Picture 1 (spheres, one colour):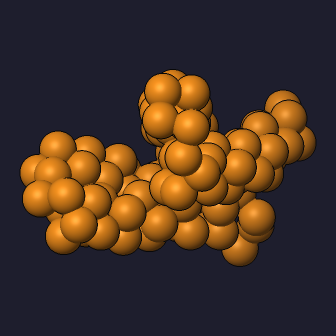
Picture 2 (picture 1 turned 180 degrees about the vertical axis):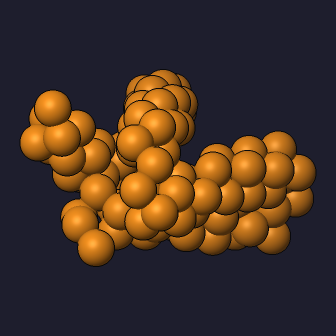
Length: 106
């Protein structure tokens, strides 16, 4: 299993956990739904990468880029490191592994 798969799986799990925490702490259904949907997309992308589907890595990159942009905007607005800053840092780290895998695959 390569690092891009681990990155997609880990970031997906963190997105789901973050959505659940957002729902519990702020009663935010939007956090729950968006965290669950984006997390499941990343977990599915990891699964299909394991199955050898090349498109799955592109899906993981697109979902991760979307989350990084969302959380970067949230960080700029709230100036609170948790959870936005942490998700930006972890998302950029995950993207590093994913883009590296894309470059190796070419």
